[in-house]
Amino acid sequence: MPVSRTPLLFDFRSLTVFRGDRRVLHGLDLQVRQGEHIALLGPNGCGKSTLIKALTRELYPVERTGMRFEVLGQDNWDVDDLRRMIGIVALDALHLLSHEVTLRTVTAHELVLSGYFGSLGLWPHHTVTRAQERRSRAILRFLEIAHLTHRPVAEMSSGEQRRALIGRALVHDPAALILDEPTNSLDPGAVREFLGLMRKLARSGRTLVLVTHHFSDVIPEIERVILMKSGRIIADGPRKKVLTQAAMRRLFGMV
Image (cartoon, one colour):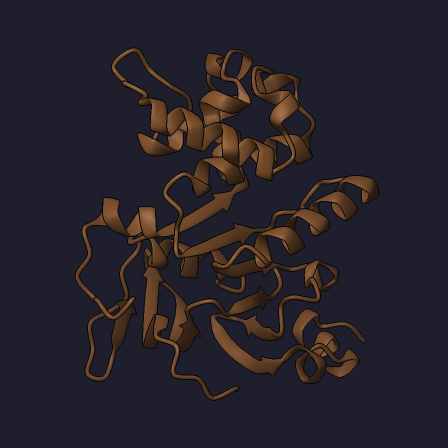
């Protein structure tokens, strides 16, 4: 890995995480520096989602000697503060929203603003400031969906919905943006457009963590690739050395 004095964003050592009685992460080590762009690549069920839930303190690792679980040098975070520092964009947020009547009424602008309140959409008790309004509109312009400001989420394409969700994650100007399987179920044209957006995000000055099982999602700005299988990291290094045919066969069990 490149030598750098840039502070560590994530410093995880010997993480073991259970979901129920099943051990999902096995003594995992992961260090990511601020401003670094990485791709975490692995098949479904390899532990990627569990690692994200550990990041946001939805799950906790087993306490043991030598275990380290730090974000920006701290291991004791207020969960709300931590989730503002790390912007996570996951499709299950859209699935949650889709089960509510608000899907038909929440606009792109409202969805972005709701990031300030940790909700999906605005509620009567939410008071939006002028500064928050300006920030939301600037984000919509950056994401190239200003024309969707007043359009309900239900009337957007899948790619447009994901852009709005990214906007929701950006309102707090997080130190890192984590995209969880961002191109799943998109058609080829939408994938191409979304990869262009990811390149723009990578050049915006914050850490980008791409979590995916599609190696074609790894944009040129991502120089470090981590391969994960069965709850363990099996390779970690420069993309040119890690993304080989032999590694892909080993990772996905291809003959």
